[in-house]
Length: 337
Ligand code: UT7
Image: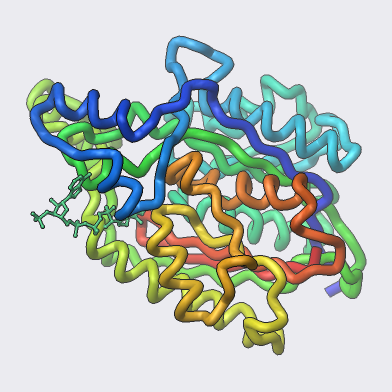
């Protein structure tokens, strides 16, 4: 392999509106099912999340993506005209057609790029980064923009207290560029896997081509998120730990070599359980679920950007990104920063 890929810039953004657990309590009680701030904190670690206003075009999914992308481009010292590939990971696109990647391309003026969406739910950013890496390794792409962004609040199932408490909106982005195959700062490996047999664990039944949103489906809430939280929890802990181990071992590392672990942020208890299995001290784990909830494809790039900008992640350090999501999908990327 002549080339490798490296991240040269990161960025993130969140919508303005903070939604506390008490706000969720108020909204739920109108629907006659209950929860409380203490339960949500104890069982998920989430204190608040952000919701986009759908009336505000600046907070549409692609607009959040643009804001995050601009910050990543600034850090990388690149202009939109220098991007030749846009990969947009989302399961809450602006529109079914065109792709949110094309909306972003239009808004940011990346006229030399080709653009596509990836839907791997919460693993989307990992799938997108792995795809960009392969195009860069092949020599076809010089500069890629990978975005993980979601506006999930319109899909929240307010009749299900198990799932409505965890989701939030946000966007993260990374500029990924060609470097030499033996360059110290580069993506070292990517491991991806899906298990479609487990589709039922997290899905939105209606709104795709297999099921229109009829008045009957609407009244049954079939256009909203349906989640088997307890079951996903168990799979998540097992697979996040497995993928982290596989990633480290295939590169000849152990957990002691790892500087920063950035797992998908679905529930603080999942993160803690995985860290415990891996014997990874929590001081080396990047966490943002307490402030933003589960932003699906955006959790990893927003956590990565936060740790880069506040100086936790330093040049030469070993960083592991690790995700699971609807599908189910799994993936891990190990990189030297
Ligand atoms: O990135 C997307 C993938 N999704 C996930 O990773 C989600 C993974 N799962 C989870 O995060 C957790 O399973 C949840 C937060 C969804 C639920 O927490 P849990 O500790 O697994 O609760 P549970 O489903 O086992 O429910 C325990 C009890 C039940 O009551 P009973 O049957 O014991 O009386 C639930 O009805 O807690 C009840 N419960 C709640 N009570 C107050 C469930 N949700 C709530 C709630 N407030 N919001």
